[in-house]
Length: 78
Image (cartoon, rainbow, N blue to C red):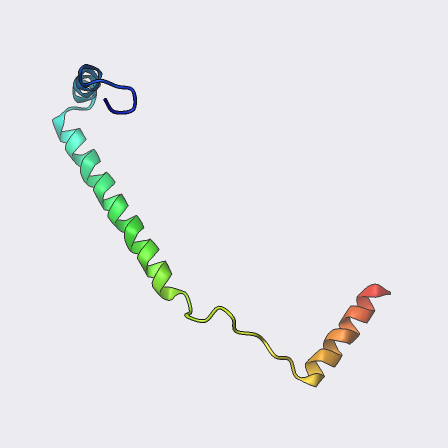
């Protein structure tokens, strides 16, 4: 029993799908689904490889940048 469906129900559903789409269309749907899953897995693995190894990098501002930032924040307060 798969998800509440018995073998008889699954066979009836399969027969209806086969009558509606036909064997050629079912083959192309399966092929397209396989290609989509393969592309998704490739995109996920490429994304994981593209992440930098160290996520704790910090940006250090020089004193001139800090003075400029404080001047900008004071202008916005007024």
